[in-house]
Length: 138
Image 1 (cartoon, one colour):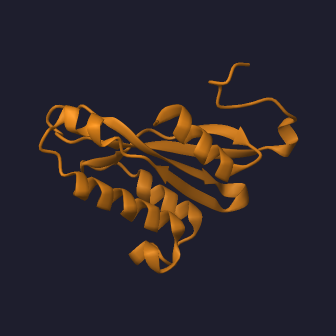
Image 2 (image 1 turned 90 degrees about the horizontal axis):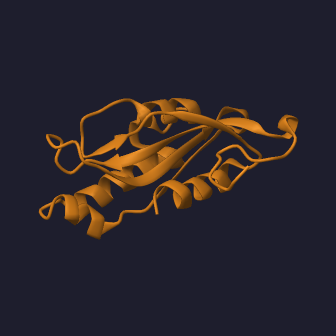
């Protein structure tokens, strides 16, 4: 297996299933162009939902010189708040990790959109979040 595979070696019985989706920034919805700006990971077995974001402002402005960069950062922070749970999650504060994940990955036509949900196996969902960010976003 090479480094690009999502599922890595190891015994299958010590790994848990996880789901992930990319967060995409679509600055001009009518054009359909996007850049990846984050990754959202959910692992039911560990009640884990986490997100890591990275906005490449130069790439965003290449797609739309007039993009609302501050607004995109605010939208990404809002997703981070929902993932964190508690008071930062707003109306989702009392929801479990799975409900928060499903709410975030629900299709929407806003500037920050979730991509399709994919699956894999991991021994450490938090580390997987960082690995996927490096692999698919940066």
